[in-house]
Structures are given as C-alpha cells and as structure tokens.
Image 1 (cartoon, one colour):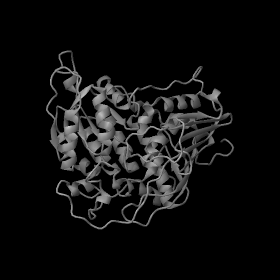
Image 2: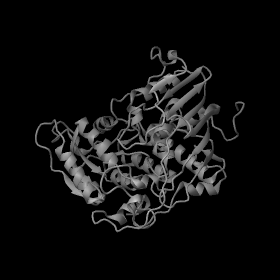
Image 3: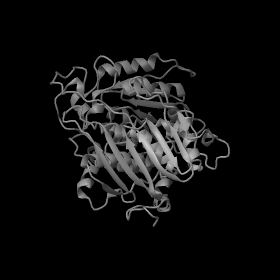
Image 4: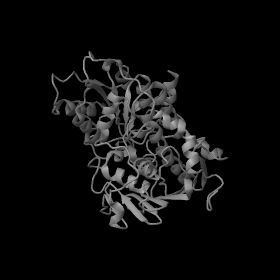
Length: 462
C-alpha cells in the first residue's frame, strides 16, 4: 500500500480490473431498430420522440437535435399542455433541410403512449431529475435508444437499474454531459493523462450555488398542468408555482431548488464537472473510497437544496478531490509539475444558467507550455456536438461519448458526496460493491421511497 493510502483505498489497477465487465458494456454490439435495417429500409432518417418541452428542451436539446439533421421529431410529450403546444410549434416552425415533407408530429400528455409507439427509434428526455429513471427505463424497455438530460438519476439504486437495462435491452444511451463533446475539456483531459502536470496529486471542482427563498403559499393547480403526474414518485404536496416551473415564461424552474426533485448543484452541475474530473483522472469506471462533506441546508420546505458546501474525496493513487462553491467554476488538475484549469468560459447551455461571479478562461495553466497539444501520448474520443454524436451512434450502434456505465459512475460520486453532506460526517465507499463500508445509515440513502403508481420500481412491476 502506498504511503498515505487508507485501508479501504483501491489502486487504479484494481479499479480497472474490477471494471473490465462494466467497460465491456460500452463495447457490446447494440441492437439496430428493425426499421433501419437493410438497403431497402424505408428511411435512413431517424424518427424521434421528445419527452419534456420546458426550459432545457427549448433552449438546448430540441435546437441541437434539429441542427444535427439526422432525424425527424414525430412525437412530443409534456404534462403542461401550454408547454406542449409551444414545443410542438417550435419544432414545426424550425427550418428542415431534408428531402420530402416533414412527418406528422403528434402530441401526448402521457409519456407511455409515446414510448409504446413501434415507429419511434429514439427519445430525448428533458424532464426534472426525479423523473429520469422511470421515463428512461420505460423507453429502453420499449426498444428505444435514449438521450437523457443529466444527472442520470436521483439515487444510486436507480442508476444501477438504468445502467443494467441499457445492457439488457441492447440500447444506445447518451447522458447530456455535453462537456465531453467540447474541445477544451477533451484537450485538458488528454494533457493531464499524458503527464503534462506530472504526477496527479489533487483535483479541485468549483460549482455554483442556487439561491433559497421563503416558502410561497398554496395556489390553485393550473388547468393546463397534470400536477399529480408531474409529482410522480415524490410525496404528494400542495401546488405552488415556486415548486414547479414558471407559467408565463421559461426561466429557471423552482423544482431545481427542491430536494424532493433535485439534490442541488452537487448533482446539477456536479454531473458535468465530476464527469470531466473522472475523465482526466482515468477513473471513469471507478469512484472515491472515502468522502467527507459539510453543507448548509435551508430550513425552508420548498427551496431547500444545499447552500454553501465543501466535500473532500479520496481517489486511487492517493489523489484528493475537493469540491466547493468557493472555487472558480470549473475543474483544476494539480500535479507535481503544475496545474491545468478547464471550464465553459463564457458559454452557457441556456440563457437562465447561473452565472459565475468570476470570468473564467475556458482553458488555463500554471505555464503556457503545459497547454501545447503536440506530442500527447493519450488521445481521447472526439465529438463535434453531443446530440449529433448520439444520433450517429443510433445509426452505427457504437458507444456514445457518455454511455451508461460511465455516466452512472460520475453521478454516483455526486450522490455519495450529497450523502456525506447530509450526514455531516465521513463515509467509506466501496466502488466495487457500490455500497458503503459497514454503514447501514448511509446505505439507506442509496434509494428513496416511491409514491405509487410512479417511479422506476412501479414500471418494473408492470
């Protein structure tokens, strides 16, 4: 054991050996939809379904899918009929560069009707975090390939179910961790893995915060919203716009600040930055061995996700990761020969993304020479655009940039960090068994109760 390693730490070699089966999941031959097989297939253009027509769908997913121009939307679903109509109009009014007329675009208020259609090849899921597991599993089981907005799931248990379902049903899966398809993030990871900073010793992740506010009183449920189905597996609570999404615009929704619906920025942006950190650290199919976290949790019942926080994680080869809102938004890799920092810079996925108080460079280093792309020993997969990569992989049946086994592991590190923050004490994590070490209290937080008839377990029973 290396000096400074804990008894529960796992070497990178052990990680890679134990993860061999999981790595194979991303390389298995995937099942091509029968409609696309053969030279006489009626159309090589994909037929797509969109589930969710809110902020991230309108500002990010739908425009990117349309720009890729490899398929056509034939179905759209949302629980808010006003947003459903807006989303349908957005798609129908968008320019289309393809031969022949656009296929009919049908609207649904119940996602089950959409995923049960045999003529749909793939779905894009752009819904609140707590609904991801149910919707994605139902689509995968129905033979659809899935592009799923991050974070992958709300719980580790859901992530395992989803990861295993992708393998079992032979589907193509892409998590919306689009930083993997952005050049500076790939280059930063290539530089670090090629040894530009020397021996990697620590990583810092800076994430933003979401504000809190006093609880708003109960309001009448809008006639255009199926509120019970919107709540899904979460507890039945009174309606107020603060808890759901704006009725007048597509600004940042309140559910992103409610812990029944979202764990906060530790998963909201953590899903992006942990993913890149794992990529650069070469532990994409592993995880931490020890996590210690502290955070401020508001006493409000609605906007009650974590406030200021600091989490410290121990990784193989005695690499320490620290995550805090006090750091510059991005990922900084430290080695014994310097550091490399990578971020989105001024780029935002949507106009309502939280804005950093600091103006970050997209790529920076302790010395300019560390950023020279010449002579790298490691070259990572490339993608010009994340949604395009997904659609190309639906055709080719190759693994995407963010396949389920890798997406699940980065999300797990986020969730384990949240558990340590909630418990306000250190926890020991075994990435091989995906359980805590002799810690029933922490293990109990790897899953959540589901309100019937919603949730992934109820789909499993159906």
